[in-house]
Length: 254
Image (cartoon, rainbow, N blue to C red; front, side):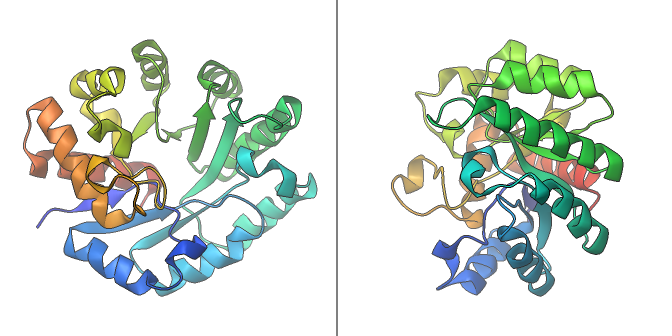
C-alpha cells in the first residue's frame, strides 16, 4: 500500500468532533500514515497536544496564524517558547503573513511572524508558513533572518517565487487547488518542479479537491491530490507518494 503524508491538516477543528476517529481510520485505509497538525492560536495548542498523544498518525506543530490576529497577544510568543520546552513538536506553525484579508494590521503581523521565526531558529524546528498576497515579503524576511527551513503551504505564487524558495532549501505544499483544471499556473509549476521540494497536503477541513467540491475536506482525500500530481508529472503514484513522504519525514524528523 502507498505511504502518504498529509503535511497540513487542521484535524483538531471542531468540525471533526463528531467523527474524528473515523477520519483517522479513513486516512489509514487510504495510505495516509502521517498527518501534520498545525496550530493557529494559543488556545489550539493544548487541544493539538492531546489529539496527537491519542492518535499516533498525528504530529503536532504550534504557532500563531496571521488570520487569527485578534486572538493573539504579544505574551503568546513567550508562551510558545514555554510550550515548546515542555511539549514535542515537529514544527513551528502555522505562521506567516496575510495581506488578502482586510483588517489584519500588517505591522502587527510582521512582528508576530518575525518573532516566531526566531523561536523556530532557536529550537532548530522547521516552519509551516502561510503566505497570501505576501509571498515576496515572506520570502525576503526568511532569507534575511537565515538559518531557517520549512514549507510554504498551499502555495499559490509564481514559478519565480517558487524558485526563490527552492534556492533557500524550502518546500512548497500542494493540495486541493491543483486538482482544478483552471489552476493552470500552479499545475505547470507542479508538473516541472524538483520533486524533492514537493509536499502533499489537504489543509483539512478547507480546500477540498474537485472531486469533493463544497464538502468538508479530510486527510483521506489526499489520494485525489496524489492522482492529480502523478498525472501532471506523468509519473507513477507510488513514486510520488514515496518521494513526498520522504521529503516530509526528512523535514519534520518523523
